[in-house]
Image 1 (cartoon, helix red, strand yellow):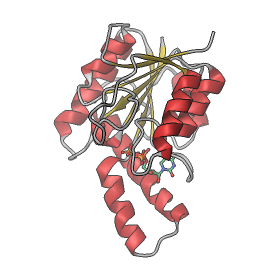
Image 2 (spheres, rainbow, N blue to C red; image 1 turned 135 degrees about the vertical axis):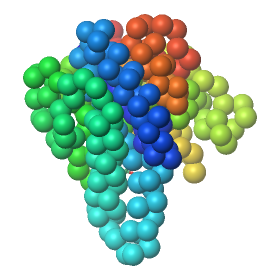
Image 3 (cartoon, rainbow, N blue to C red; image 1 turned 120 degrees about the horizontal axis):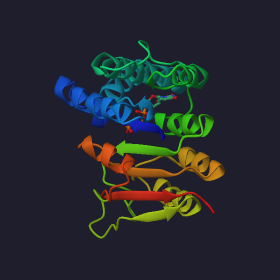
Image 4 (cartoon, rainbow, N blue to C red; image 1 turned 90 degrees about the vertical axis):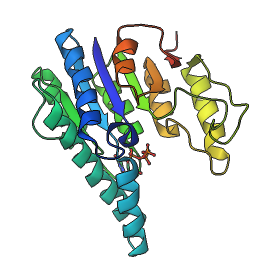
Length: 228
Ligand code: UTP
């Protein structure tokens, strides 16, 4: 199976703990050992937010703040590459084309952000679209897609399955609600919808869940069903 794994920065390296990075790398190594083609897209997490906060106070434009964020995602990608035992391309792919070329050489492709104006959620969806991935896994800090932000609303319900167009609607409602944080951003959901990607959103703070989802086990999370 060809798999794109999107690993949030807050899931991979919230406190720059090497054991946590190692745990993610070992799951990806295991997928490769099982014969899967693997690409990983890494987010920036709290480290990116801190850098962006400081740059904002220094008067940076939104474009330049995004450039700061991208730089941190690429640093996190380097941490993951360092921990990967198997044939990962030794530097983060800076474009989707470079990531696809890595996969074609039989290497694990690892990348962070690409250009200002979106997040690694969209980068992952675009990569999955481009390489015709069989599965796109979002390893986030929440166990799936909820009807509302579960940290803000006690009654929030997790969806076990959603069609891609239902996902677009749910995320668009969450993003419209002031202060709410969606587990996957709207642009990513639209890419998932237009390409009929099979995706799963799960709690990646336990990296083994990523392997379980690829193996087709019943994992707590939200499965996004491709359109018929
Ligand atoms: P993330 O993908 O980690 O953003 O990229 P996020 O969703 O805000 O982070 P989490 O999920 O809450 O941890 C970090 C930042 O880098 C910039 C954006 O500013 C983003 O917020 N970025 C990232 C880009 O501008 N382009 C990219 O392709 C990726």
